[in-house]
Amino acid sequence: MAKKLKVGDTVFCEKFGPMKHQFKGTISKIYENSALVQFTDFDSKDKIAAGDLHNQAIISLKDLFDEDGFKKKQEKDAKKASKSKK
View 1: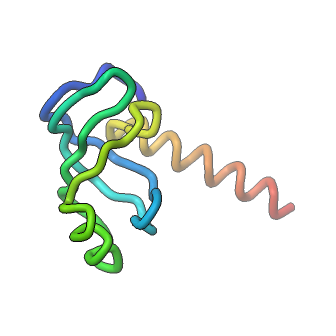
View 2 (view 1 turned 45 degrees about the vertical axis):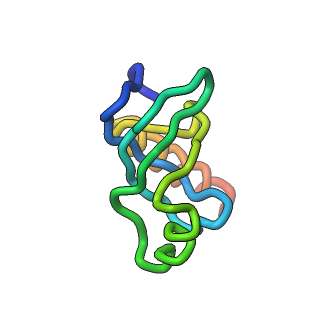
View 3 (view 1 turned 90 degrees about the vertical axis):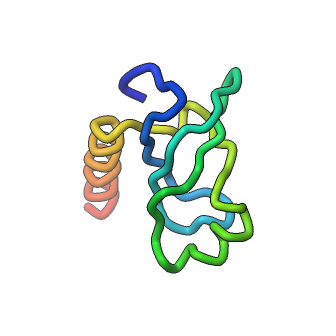
């Protein structure tokens, strides 16, 4: 998380539970260590899972990223994956 998140911010989330792909959402409510996120953009393969969750989920704040933080995490994960293949 690169900056302090607030209600209305767009966030990027890693896959979790029934959501098998990364997704984007908007913060609806902030709790002490988590936030209620409304899904705004997700993989079409997760349509049923998103519907089962009523297009929202409570996600740990440490697992939410702004756009810059999400790109950095993807780059870091890609480097880690390429090192493990060697």
